[in-house]
Length: 554
Image (cartoon, rainbow, N blue to C red; front, side):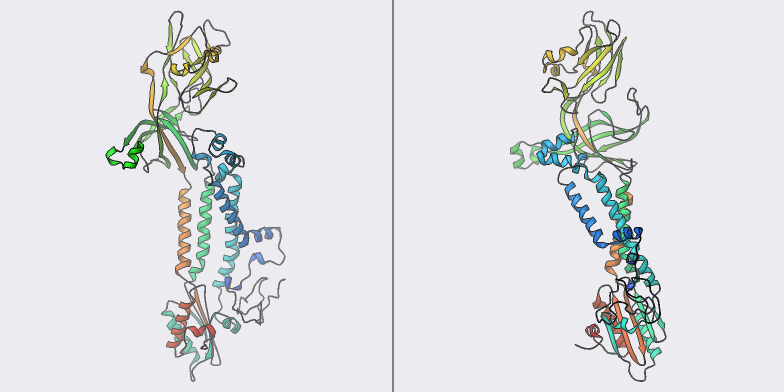
């Protein structure tokens, strides 16, 4: 229920005001003796309207500190759930559903099904962050505007009831024959020496210092809002990427979601000597890498970037030696050395198309094991790629599948058209390595082999092997400067509120009776000492502790 906000001094205050804007007299609990609530100096806030509209109700919802705390709690809980298992972008070359099922069983399957495997990019988590930001903005505006009005229009002569209900108070008579205005001026001089800004009105005085510290919490809010905006900016396409990619030695591979290509020119591995290893590791026969380095070349695609049927036109833009904690960095795109694997694999072959009956060769073509083209030409024949299996295998029904995305046992299915062949084309299954072909029964692959043509590697000169696979963490984060700026502003607010305290001292003299009130948001001990020292130097002896009881010794 809202009370009458007209003060005895005649000033009409807005609804929700608890201390008169003019004299400071309490409008709530007028006859009480408890300490006054000095937050925002009793000024009315928008969230205290007597007849709120729909917009005001939304404002009231987000201006509630209790609501803000609950939103933060739910965000913290969601963040904790998102770290139970690795997020989807932290593992390579595996279907997420299969990964969680194999590594974490039923719980992992449920985790992935509920969408927790991509918590931090989910719509509901971003909504929680947006609600925190909205709450910060509205909470700040709801409080900072009344506080600004209160501090910018402070009255020097305060109501006696206002002064005596402060935590630091003094009530007593001035020494006889004292010039009241001169005594007030002298007290102002003493307080100025303590860095107070002093304002006087006859026998009334207001002294304050470190007012700027009151804005510390709101500087914190500004920093947090900028920080959250930076986090939300990561959802803008092209502003943020945190991907993992594997690149075979000698391979050139496109960086996901960009027009850049990265080539692993050479991978160098240096191991510790046995004499440098402790006995416990020697006994286990472990191989411990001392350092590993990827000599990388970064290319930018300038033409045919989206056309898979044509070779992209690449221009070299940067070179770097990538080691652990020393990434490649080019215009905000960073490539970190993440891991490596020693596993010889095919990178590409140069097979030739021949007639097995006559031995006639129709030419060769370059066939990469990663991202092969849809169509190749050899003499008068055209080879259309119908299927590609990096690690060929058969399922329970005898159908071809790929066990992984790595070219461990590559197999290709082509449809060949040309002279002497059916117009619809003849199927041909090609294994670059004969050992892979021998791993499967002829019945399984005979149906996809043409007897009229043969594809085979004519010379080992056209075969490229990679001894190592390097794993890189590719990062782009254009929002990071905003996050750092927000963090810096937040720390400025923390320092403002932690190292300084807003201190105010009011006095008024009525017919030789001195009434003093003092307020600070913390460090009352320091304020009491400053008040007691100023009074003592101005001929009123009082102990600091007695100021908690109106200057009366306990």
